[in-house]
Image (cartoon, rainbow, N blue to C red; front, top):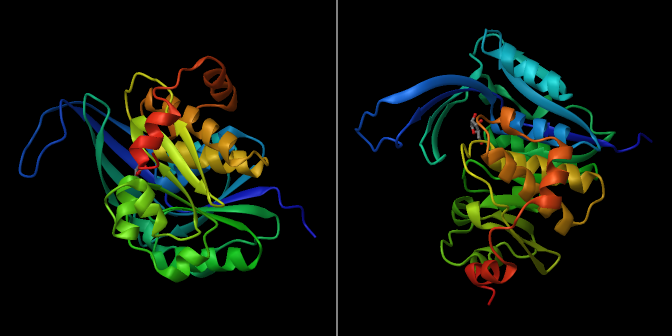
Length: 313
Ligand code: RIB
């Protein structure tokens, strides 16, 4: 039997078109930007790069690209990071793109045109024999995501779903997920509860869930116990891809047999570092940089503050 030492990420890849502006335009408003740049992005590819940079396990990715010029920088970024890319080439669709407006305080608004990403199907899933963890997001068709999760669960693979962008999920899909990673908005969409984190998580029953809380940090409800991880301090330049960095780093740590608390700490440090740099994949730190942040970085709040915020105290 093959050794299970590989993380498989199945998901999207987009070329990000980024314009920086004073603020994100309101509906009907036009703002003048200052600078335009493209970066390799897409939640799936960002998470694959984060897994690979975190080290410790082989990273493979299932993705779909068009046969156009936008595909090239996406393939190169995955290759440079050491990701084994399994590319489905869709000649009738354009490579996925994302239009990102980045405000001066690092917040963003993103519109995605999925293109080739929307053509991924259940039967594109590669062999799972050497796969320990399957990491999924929701920028590819929901039917495919559900089928991949089901196959992986049946094959004894640990299924991690980052339910982004926010969509409602069927109980069948949730039943196939070992760890759900969401932000507060996604948690509210899935559970219908927009109040305290503790109440929304209770709606998910026994599901292991990690909730990212932006600049506050993150928390997790695992095997009936709460874990609280404050964020690390950083001067924020661009939050794009910070959540993806969190997910990839978290799964890579779990694949190296780190406990949940240690995986949360590494993910928290990595995502802070990503917020201090421009772009999505370009902002993912190396394992060495994460080590350094863990040694010398400062947490921005205390577990007690997080406990109160989540409604646990
Ligand atoms: O999570 C950030 C990503 O969302 C961007 O890279 C963009 O491509 C969209 O998928």
